[in-house]
Length: 130
Image (cartoon, rainbow, N blue to C red; front, side, top):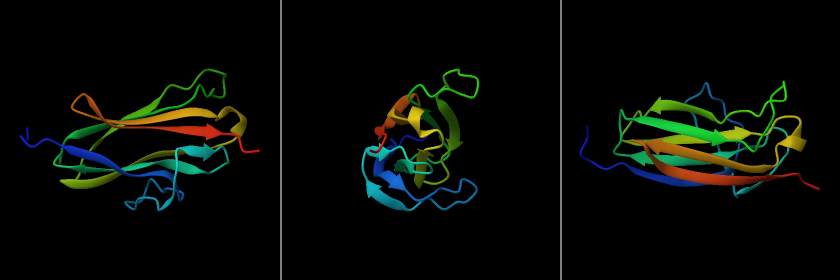
């Protein structure tokens, strides 16, 4: 294990262009904000810059505000893991608004965890526009 301490910082957070998860390209940053309108296909989240952590496992999690699934059950948080590919790596964590927008309002918390510690944490407030 590396003796270097990982350096993680959120470099962009807010609204982004649509993200293609099959591409290596990160979405384009459009607006810095934590207030996100509940409009279908609005992409939001953050890009973190992670240094000195190559080949370590990064755990991500998105906590949704009690959004029900098709059967009416509350969706669990969306989480997973990725291997950090480089010593100076950028990672996008985000989500987008889908129909119906009426149940998407509330706090959406997004976290990154490394070696059992939360290293990035951002909460977005999704609201219904008037």
